[in-house]
Image (cartoon, rainbow, N blue to C red):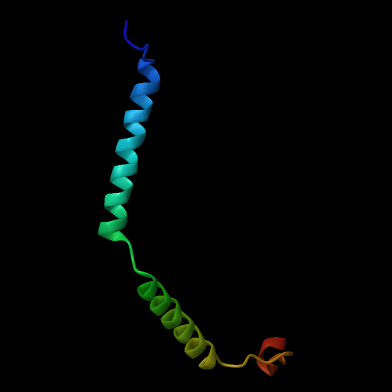
Length: 70
């Protein structure tokens, strides 16, 4: 007599293998290399520093204008 096979478990294993295969294909298709990730991170940091460098300094204690006291 043959081995007993739990059909539910076999179906889950089959589906799991399909999902893993699809994930591997997507990693190849859409994934980025380590160099690309590092380059993007460095570019983002550079842009953030430039943006912060162009920020106008706001006064700590703004004085009310004379026209607003009416």
